[in-house]
Amino acid sequence: MKKVTSILAVAVMALGMATYVIENTASEFDFMNDISKSLACDDCSQGIPPRKGSTQLS
Image (tube, rainbow, N blue to C red; front, side, top):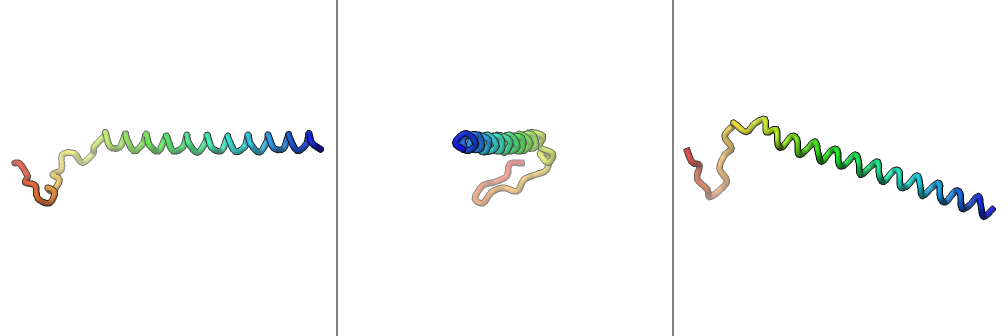
């Protein structure tokens, strides 16, 4: 019975570790997508309204 409990504990721990790694990998890909979208800058040519208290240079 001790062997079965030990094997089950190791299996549950391995499943937890695999889930953790998969979630971290997915969040890393989301982070990379956010960075690539920021670097692509589709709307860079559009004028951005100035912030409060600053002046816009022409």
